[in-house]
Image 1 (cartoon, rainbow, N blue to C red):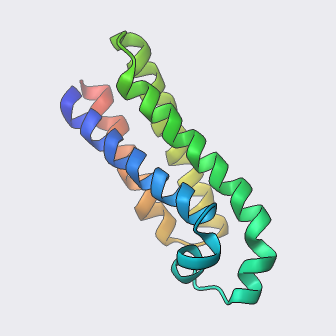
Image 2: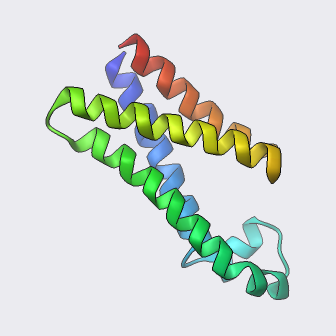
Length: 119
């Protein structure tokens, strides 16, 4: 079950690297299209989205640390922390921005948490 948790955490990590890129360096091009924004609206939102993107990068970093630490107990703690943060952020995003976020972020994170708890 630990391998399943690690695979799910890796998928969540990749999702958040992608979100980080969309909200930071790619926001005015690819990100604008993904979020369905006009060029004018994207220009206005770019600073706030870049900041938000950094936080998604921090979530990915927590998961990367959890997967790469040689100490299994520390790695597990980082995975719990990272997946828990992603789950909470996904719920908040679903409530405040778009319900789809619940399925893109929260569901995979919760699956990872369940697999990790069962490992």
